[in-house]
Length: 514
Image (cartoon, rainbow, N blue to C red; front, side):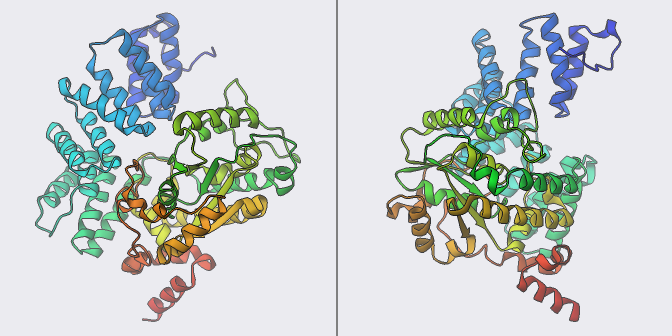
């Protein structure tokens, strides 16, 4: 193992000292800094239980939920009376999307080891399962144990409570906490909650002011350079050319079961998946990240026309061909879904990996869903993406840049994927759900089923920011929603420039001439 830069003197590299340093890195959500320290502890003291717990926590932070779960279960097997491990197992199961199992494990652990974070995760799991009553009960218990926790108050306000007027006690609580904290992440939670509360009570100017502050504080908590994303998307287009993808000579997996949804966040991907999932022979697996994890960590392809393979961001020693990755994913989704004829994956990373996916699954189908840019981008701006997968959504200039890059990439995939890609507009689904649903089902080569029109009755768990909307029939309220805050979104329209839609450009012209 390569020597780690412990920032400690050699005689300080004891398991105890290393543990405290690694624990600090985990608390700071810096798993890559913690990992070499944890490995050194385990080298010195194999089987060290606290170090194994940190290793599981590190896997959890990195999104490697399979290994996190395996480690926690190993620890539980050796420490059967440790109910805190039931909570940890439940939290990972919830993040994996196994909400029913998560509820069982969390409730078992919380019965004897009450924990605010555990109750908050229980609330998320119940909310994803559509049980608002149980979700509210759990988040209130979390608030009892940690009354000033900003994230829990945010969850309560944004998903489980609707204030009727400005006299609601939640305003006073949020404003009091805003006045006493200086932590940017906590302030972002509080201002996002105040944005939602003010919006609910019709105080639009105050709401947008809180949204602006929420985004400003959130943007301070991470580093991001939109120019890097711009260059990355250009590399994707250069590497995955139409000629290479269509004549790579790679056999891939012949299955026609995989269906991949491509789209920006808040573009209607969840609604589309729910409509498809309602079909008896189609199963949606949500934003399942297993395939993306394999591609990012293990995929390998040779250079093409001097361009290096761009998708392997976190290389390990092991390398897998597209065929091997396809085989692993095929087995994984079969185990997860049984004998479904079509299996829909709407992972947000699909829009970047579409070229690789076409090579790995030559018979797969792709659906690109898009939405009015102003509605989509304002919705992105309004959401606190707690998993940090959408860093471009907290600044209007960065939002506009990302939209331009995404649009260019989708034009490229349309050319590369040809007839295996279907374009769908969110507004068309809303305007005539049956017509669009029939068109999409036909594209997938499946017979029509009326159940697709009653998707909102599904018992399937939903774990995205759209969790509330997909529990109700299609409605038109999200079309043109940006106009309510139009005067505040002028910087976004200006940042989009010629890429702004006609109605937004007309609105800007009217505002300037007023």
